[in-house]
Length: 272
Length: 193
Image 1 (cartoon, rainbow over the protein chains, first blue to last red):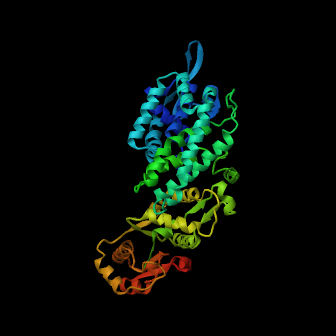
Image 2 (spheres, rainbow over the protein chains, first blue to last red; image 1 turned 90 degrees about the horizontal axis):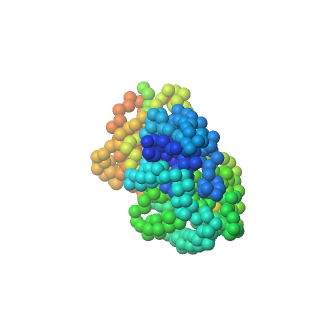
Image 3 (cartoon, chains in turn orange, yellow; image 1 turned 90 degrees about the vertical axis):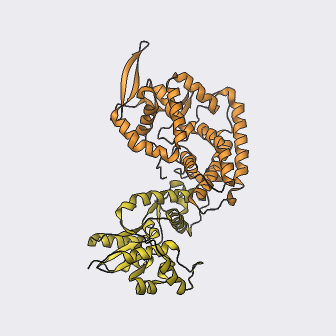
């Protein structure tokens, strides 16, 4: 923990390149989209994303330079110069020695296979197609505002029911303490999203002030509700999955995102 | 003749200085927190290092998760964390786990014993009333005593621990097994020889 599974920028890029077709990604936009997709696999990475009309966007990707782990290679495509990203042998070593052990702490082998298939598939699509797919999942489009409001309300209601049972969880094992921590954190996070971030969404324009983590967190919390329900009543807790979800929600963001344990004013967001 | 200094797992975990995430610092008025007696254990470790003495722990660690939870609970005693307290506890546990992974290799190892039937019988016959709910040392405690007893050492053997299952029977353990039990909170006063 202590950010133990957070992937650095180089690590996140090498992971994407390793899982992509031929170890390369053909443009910064596409790399951006693929990196963003790691969020939907609950993999915390150092890249921060904001929302633009093409979906999630990280300014950091534009500034990437050739380094020991991956090459940034200019090439001409339809009369324009663009850049592709290519994994270097040192990047493969980084993957084997550092990235995979981190991933193994949070993904089971079958989940890693699913990630691999998804990235391989998405890397063969155009950036706009990846973006469409992401928009639909996260409900960032203006046309989906109603669905977004429904999603935040239903997630909050379901989570509130789970939260009411939190005191029935013992604290005899690390997994039990982790489950309590996860539920507590998710409950207050969704309450914050509902009461602050998504409260006054205009219906006619994109939420350009949004932090993409508002959307990733809502989507991901809604996805784990069945798991939380099952874990509360289960005798055997799934320590790996609990830790994976916890690490993602708590460690993906730092002081730049208001709901973070690195924000000294977090208490004000929780008691409000 | 050099003495041997061995630490139980909880005492080793107390060497960990816990970084307090910014959001929780208001409840502590500091940026890091160390377990009670942690500074005493560290003082002894520093003395050993200065004298060029190795430090020992017992293997295998069968109840490391339990020990981590125990030390985490001790660390939080006396603090009133009025926000996301399970989250803070899980963060502490995470740091202790990482610390344990790092510190492992810094200690030489003493194998715990396996055949504890005889030693168990001895404790059963000498059972004492302790402040703990269970006055009988646990099997893992007995494995430590047996393993340490078998461990070859020309000098004296010291066991640094906070566990009453050891110090509550200190005189008996010294008499029967030739092991000096040192209470964790007094360990910094030991003279190294």
